[in-house]
Each structure stands twice: as C-alpha cells, then as structure tokens.
Image (cartoon, rainbow, N blue to C red; front, top):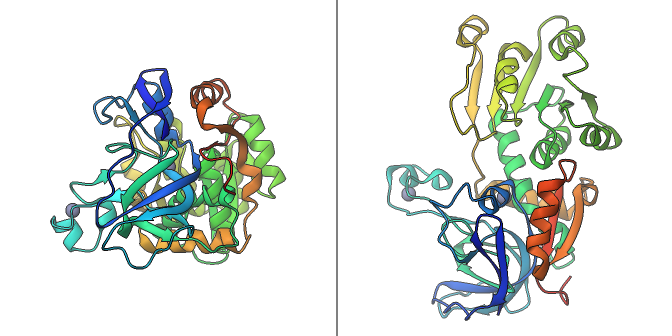
Length: 342
Ligand SMILES: [Zn+2]
Ligand SMILES: [Zn+2]
C-alpha cells in the first residue's frame, strides 16, 4: 500500500510499504480522509521525536470503510463506514479499572505511538472502531475525532442552557467547542487575535472579541451585571489566556483547561480562592463523546463544512504540512487517502 511517512523534522516521504498483518481482533480500514491535527503539525516540525518512531505514517482523524476483519471480529462487515477512537488503553491500571480508559496511565495514542492513518489502509483494534451511518459523507466524518474533543470539553464543563460562555482561542478546536456549547444552549463569545478566524466565527453567528483591541474582561462584566462568565474554555494555550481566565469567570464559575501548555505559566490562585472557582482538565474523549459527535455530524446540526480549509491528496502530505505552517488563518486540512470512496 501507499503511505505518507514521517521521516524527520520537515520531511514526509510518499512510498510503498508492506501491508500490516491483520490480528484476530483487528480491522483493516480503507481510509477515505485523514485530518491534520495540531499534534500532527508538531510531529512534522520534529517536536515529538521522542514519541514517534520514524519512518512511520502518523495521523489519527480518519473516516473510511471496512476492508477486512480479523477472525474474532463479529459486528463489522466489509464496506461499512467507520471511524476510529485512537486511544489504546492498557485495561489494567487503576485509572482504567476506575473507568477512565481515555486517560489510562499507559495510554498509547494510535497514529502517534503507533502507525497512523496517512496511508491507504489503517489496521486497528476492533474495539476502537465506531460505526458511522451509511448516509454520512466521509469527508465530514473525518471531523468526528476533533468534534469528540469538543463534546468532551463541553460535558466536562457541565454546561447548562443559558450559560454565558467564553471560548479563549478560535482555532479548529475552539471553533468546534463554540459550536458544541451553542448546540447545548450556551451563549458563546469567542476571543481570538487572528482577524480571519474572527471573521469566520462572526459568519457562524458568534459574538467575537479581539482582546488586543477590546477590553475583554470589561466587556464580559458589563454583559453579566459585573459578575463574569459561567464557563471559560481556555483553548489558546497562551500566557495571556491563563492570566485572563480567572478574571473572566464569575464567582463559582468553571474554567475548562483544554489547551496543552508545554511549560508552567502564572495563574492567579488568589482569584480561585476569592471566587471559589472550579477548574477542570479535559483531555481527548470517551466512548460517549464519540457517539455524541457522530450523532451531531449525522444530524447536520453544525456548519462543519465551513471549517474545512482545503483537501490534499495523500501524495501531497508534505505540501499540506507546509501550507498549514505558512497559513495561520487555515482551519481544518484533510488528506484524501483513497480517491474512489466518499
Ligand atoms: Zn486530533
Ligand atoms: Zn490503563
């Protein structure tokens, strides 16, 4: 099969590689689309060489059809549409036993620690494969994985209809969180410094703020009788974002930590004490978040098409990474891995 393998920082090679052997409990998926995640871009830039065994195809945001099933797999048939929840947990640690398999202490992320979906075929454990409705376009289904992240974040927030919500950071995940939060009844404001992203958020009907031009804290306070927002999603990963989140939340408000901060940043803990704030971490997704994301895509409840910036063929993965690196405005970029399936 053809695969686009990560070789080293800045270098992808499109080449023939041998088929992976199919285990008894595994499914071989013919990949339709594989989205480029922020994590994949970090891999391309060489930031994650300690976790990625090169040469290896990465990628984990896929949609596709079943090409082959292992001997023990009973609930999947050839040609059924599927997606993958790429979290291979150990099933033995205390966290798995407690039911939190998505944050397993020995978690292996498929497509990072193992071969991934930037290839014509991807072979994965059947227990991580989700059925898709047969009418669902596979292009949109490639957004199920990042949408499941957003569903998980909104669930962790315990958002209630009517809640005032701030999303700090309007990239692909921030935008998906905003869409999910609005679908759950939240009144959402997106704070973002990139004007193109602000324009997109505005066109999707969100209230938007550029905190470099507008005093975000003053604005939110004036809109909430001086109190602040019920829920703040910190998605920017910036020091400014971490600084302002405790100001933005109302007394007893909730902060959801979505961004990946590579190193510690200052946080005003006095505000936590004074306002009795609650902060929850939110990492990846659980089974139910995937099922919820699949339902949202199938119901055409969200304008997901407008988040897809461009689609490249598999042999152009190198160009796709370079395009994303050079285009701070870009949202989701998809790689089409087999042209004949839709
Ligand atoms: Zn992802
Ligand atoms: Zn475990």
